[in-house]
Length: 214
Image (cartoon, rainbow, N blue to C red; front, side, top):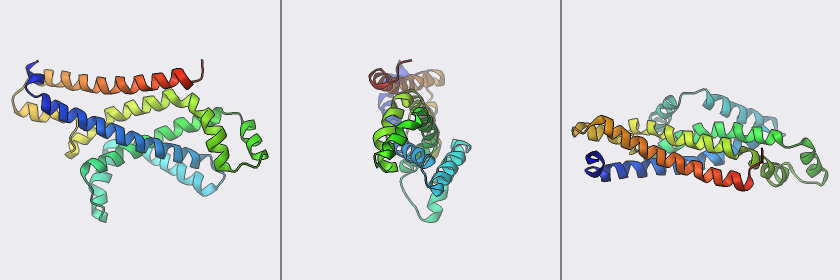
């Protein structure tokens, strides 16, 4: 317990940092994921190509490499932002590719007749997607989207290697102070468990309320 009680502020700062990274990156991932899923099913060919390239590149790029590209590459082009913002961009963009595919799979479960009926009523593609297709697809993708956000929370640990304050990075400070590294990792693991269980609980509530009964 001494590891925790003597360094509660250090653990707290890292925990809050991980929560902030997870929260803001999740919002970015959800927005981009919905947008890219819309692009992938759009009637405009250039949109479909853009969405396909986005997903293909990000899903097949190691997250650590993406961190290097964003945190070290973008400043070379004159874009200078706090490292935490760069970390949010890397995490959010990476996870958006997986959320896009989860949403697209949900869209594919909606009967084609739904979209055809909407178009026969004069609705545009945007109206059909937002008012008819996505609300039905949402019900079937709650669980996979939740799983992707849980993975995002755990992936945020990579940010610590790039001078971003987060939970895993606290072990460096405590190791230098001579604390038992095993117990340090035990408390770090508990912190991640709290975060992931909280996300899981939120999506369990959403699934019970709106999910498709199986």
